[in-house]
Length: 71
Image (tube, rainbow, N blue to C red):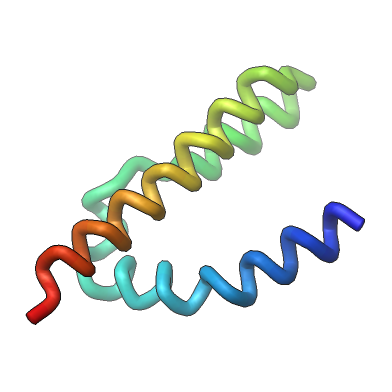
């Protein structure tokens, strides 16, 4: 059930995030996916949750910035 929810949310948000990433480039933001993967490998659920939360917030911040700069 959670996997289906995640896929559905990604299908909705992914295109917007891709447009923002293409506009600003990947170098403006740290790669939080690496942090999440490291936390998974270490079995650290708290660190994984924090990395995912930071990653989501980073995406939200970039979309807000793009909307604020839109003509």
